[in-house]
Image (cartoon, rainbow, N blue to C red; front, side):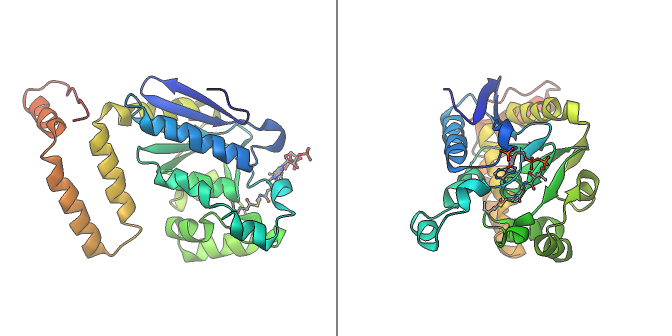
Length: 257
Ligand code: HXC
């Protein structure tokens, strides 16, 4: 399937989506977001895909929502069209999805990366929520997800001043899981995604669901949710295979059952 604003590939069991609007630093317009959603729906439905990597260019993961598209929007346009809500599809994608971020991840770009399960950053990555400089605030989850990642003080400072965070600060603050040389970023992200895709897909999906639950509920409820899914895993063939393989000192052959 050919798209205008993204590149979509399959690398074995890994789906790779590359944001590709180089002239606008991958600014996120409605067409691009529609294409990302369509590509994700394809990967969701494809039994052979076990994980996804979302990346941009070395200069920009994405420099935000497309300001030119957004600038003349009225309140009624935004309300009636439910502006931004379709972006949330990324956070509802059920298979593991990794953001590989080099260069700018600003505004909606930072928010899109935070919708993924974890972020691997290139050494040149710059994260920020500069919406305040445009007379708005983050609208795709930034005030909520950034606060959960880095805590109130840093999130508040970034949202109120528009200050950018470099990759090292982002790693120190827990926004990204690891920092890598820019020229190794996508290869490493693909390797990590491949490792995940080699595990049992239903088990990785349940694991993702359980970790995400930690953001939405109390500790006691979250632990109860985890316990239910953990118990359910003993109904899977892959649990039997994984544990038998350990005992028999061989590699497991997961069959996603
Ligand atoms: C539309 C954008 C854009 C954006 C860059 N471009 N960011 N177009 N929307 N968000 C375009 C520029 O207009 C320019 O096109 C080209 O990309 C290159 O950008 P330059 O500014 O010339 O590059 P540079 O000098 O390297 O500066 C890079 C930058 C700067 C610091 C990232 O582009 C910048 O500040 N961009 C805006 C960042 C931002 O405010 N993001 C938040 C958006 S609001 P032309 O045609 O002029 O050459 C947002 C709201 C989210 O995301 C709420 C819900 C989603």
